[in-house]
Structure formats: C-alpha cells, structure tokens
Length: 447
Image 1: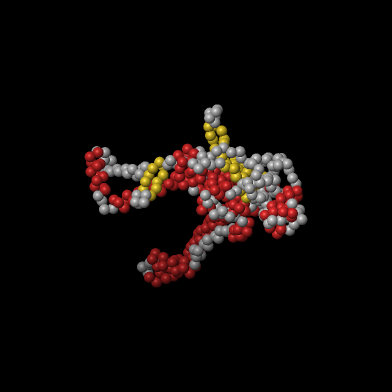
Image 2 (image 1 turned 45 degrees about the vertical axis):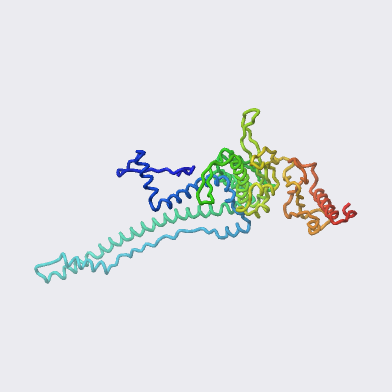
C-alpha cells in the first residue's frame, strides 16, 4: 500500500522472475482477493500504512510529549548515591597441581607395558627401578608445565582486570558526570554540559532545525535562539479512520498544515526547555526566541523572522503535564509573544531582549501581561509575608537579585526607568494593597 492508500500487487513465477503480463497480473489479483485471509492481511497492511503516514507528522507535532520530567536536587543526590563503581574479580586457576602418587601409578602402568623379560623374575625389579628413576623427572616436567599454565592464566586475568577496571571506571565517571554537572555551580562545568546537551538536542530536533544559547550564570537565565523547521517540512499526507472502519488517505488542507506547524514549533519550545532545565539546577529561567526563514517580499531575500518569544521559569514549568497540554495555549500561560491566527498563520513578532554581559538590564525578565509580578522576599516593606500575599501579590523566596522591573500593560521589552528592588517592592505592595482595599469598599484606606 502506498502513502495514498493504493494497493500495489507484485507476483513472481516459479523461477523468481517478476510477472509483468497484464492479463496474468489481473487474474492473479482476482485470485489473491479471493483468498480466505485476504481481508485480514489487507487490514494489517492498512493499519501499518496508517501508522506510517501519521508517524511522519507526529515526529513534528508530538515531540513535546517526550519532554523529560524536571529533575530536582534531591532526586539527583539520591541517584548519585546509587552510583557505584564495579571492579573485575579475576577468575581462579582451577587446574589441580600434579600429584606424585598419580604420576607413580601412571609410570607403573607404563612400565608393565614396556618391560617384559623372558626371564620373568627380572620384570619386577626393573619395573621398580624404571618408576623410581622417572618419578622426579616426570613430576618436575609436569609441575613446570602446570606452573607455566597457571602463571599464563593469572597474567591474562591481571591484564583482563586492568582493562575491565579501566572500562568500569570510565562507565562510573560517565554515569556520575551528568549528575554532578547538574549540581555543580562551576560555570565552566555548566557551559560544557550545556554544549553537550545542546548538540544532542540539535540531533533530535525534527526537520531542518537547531538551537544556540547564551547563559547568564549570575541570574540563572538561559537564552535560547531556536531555528525552527519551515512550514514546508510538515508532511502533507494524513490518514483517518472513518466511522465505517475503513481508512481514508488524503492530502491535508493548508489550514491543517498550518495548525500542525504551530503545534510543532510551539511544542519544540517545551521540549528544548525541558531538556535544558535538566542540565543544571542553577538554570532557573529559560527564554526561547523561535525564528523561521522567510522571504522578504520587498527584497526577495530570506530573513530570520521571529514568530515567538517565551519565558519559562523552572517552578511553573515543572508542574506541566506534557501529555495533556496544547502547546500554543500552554505557551500563552507564560510571559510570551506569539501571534497566531485561527488558521495557524504565525505573524512576525519582536522577541524579548537578550541582554549582554554588561547590559544594565541583566536580570530583568518579561512578564505576562495583566499579571502581577512576584515580590522578592524578604522584602523591605513594612508588612509581613502573609499580609503581602493577602493583598494579592505573589511572593518568591530566595531568588536573590532577580527582580521584575516590568509592570502590567507594558508591551515593549525595554524596562521603565530603573527602580531599586526596594522601591519596586514597596510600590508594588502598596499598589496592590490599595486595589484590594478599594475592592473591599475601603476607599479611604485605599487612598
């Protein structure tokens, strides 16, 4: 069955040569369809083709479901404690050493066969003499041969132990490496781990896509530039089961292709973020700016057009149940910029800023419009943590200098005139407390 659902028959003659005569082919096709197991085989081939056709699309649209669950430091510490180094135990040389009594018995048998006198009374003394004279020689010879075999065996086991222990050590270090890298606070270790993982991620991404990154260690923020697949790479064939139980193979509509594309590129953001969050626990935030190559109609030149910019925080991301999310809707729950029409057409957007090392805006992160940014705790406001939360202001603990200078309703990625964290905390708290008081009918208190 081809990708369109058409059956393809081929037959060979008794010599294994293909049959090409049209009349013979038609006769054989009729006979084949009359076979009792034809329907069963047809259903099997149809199912296989159905799965193959849809698997091509799912490689683009369902990758986000393979996003790994985020690790925690306690998980990694437990995994690290379970890692142990194996050691090779040499085999024991089991061949027994030569036995003098056994050698004497063998020589006695040998003497009885070889020493036979006509004068029979001479047999016994000569046989005894033969045994007595040969025991030391034969014993020493067999003992030397046995010792040589033992030493060769032990030497081979020593070499095997050296080789195996080196192999086990490498496996041990390789197993520990990503776990220790996850816990490390050495920026070089983190960067090396990010390079390794980004290379692996690039190999796993579908189509002609890839990523690059910049890591701001001080603020635990990872900025990713994601080169997205093109819409033309989305497979345009689909297979669907009909109510009758038959399978329909057809071409997707342009709307279906566009919607698949949106699901694909949005899903990639979650897959990439999940992989990168698991590189190191110091990565608390990941901003992904996704771009696609598009032809500029004015110049005819391909440009890198950004179609979304999204900012993930580890805590919120860790709570997602990837099997059940809609990538586009889930992305909109985070601070993001994406414009998608109902037909799946993505418009060009201006991505969130990626600050440089000396940028004064480092540590300033975008916010989801209409949402109150968290206040950093402990805050320099004359209120308890509980009072702040009661006023409708979320509280974030132990995040150091990561403070949001964005206010609800801002649409540009640039911050307003910089406020100190103390001023921001104070004003945010008072503003939200006033709003809450007014909602409660306490206008004077609100003012």
